[in-house]
Length: 332
Ligand code: ACO
Image (cartoon, rainbow, N blue to C red; front, side, top):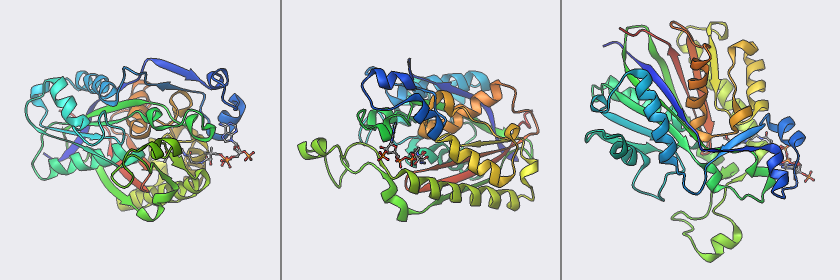
């Protein structure tokens, strides 16, 4: 073996599509113009009462396995990036998936890195190949953050959508697959994006519910500043490390949080619009699912070809961020 590459991708989405104008119909003091101009978001899919994170992850995993031509018996590792698992604490989404997909008893676990979850899951799974502990991995990014937002808080609820994306990792030819992988975290920014109530520090009580501290709280402008600095530094460092420049990138797939963040980074990096993929307009911020859903759609649209160098760059609460540079293809 020589490299670890992506053999197939898939996505899973909830049934309900919510347009910006639907918030107004639900009594929220907002407008399509405000949401579009501040974030780029036009719509998002929202999980219903009968849909949880593992349901979306299951759909994405089935699609990715079919695309890769992989059957459950081949998979020997499952890693799921999520911070909105079906159950508070345990069992993990990875264990639910293992059972539902009929995969034999293998290593299966969730990683919690908020919107950086897919990057962290990819990097973790890649290291299992390097150490000889995996030969075929299912890697998923899945979140239902709509269940963690206050639907009367206009500054938060318009931003998020639900979904899942999955990838099958297997060995590829030398020079292909994951060429560079790096994770970062800086816990000093924990206060700018968090959920304070409902965990072991503030277990669920009536006060937690009354104060709404079990919902997402964010300092939007601070997140913007930390995110753009982190993404720019990480991407520049990654390209330099493999002796490449932004011009060499066929496609930059950033975490789909906000069009203004993406555009700021794209311009600073000197990337063209054709080199940058966005679909947050349709899906909103799907957290750990945003990069694999974007990857899935970019591939389906013919935006990724064999031999292309692509960059997956995630960032999220923690603060966490990470990069994976991948040379697509190299199968056989
Ligand atoms: N509709 C209408 N008005 C709104 C809405 C809304 N949905 N939300 C907030 N406002 C109002 C506020 O109440 C405020 O009104 P006021 O001036 O009368 O008090 C005004 O708009 C400005 O509010 P700000 O919060 O200062 O809005 P800002 O211009 O900073 O935009 C945003 C908010 C889009 C979140 C911005 O800070 C941003 O782009 N942040 C980046 C962080 C981000 O995208 N986070 C996404 C998730 S995090 C992640 O994925 C890691």
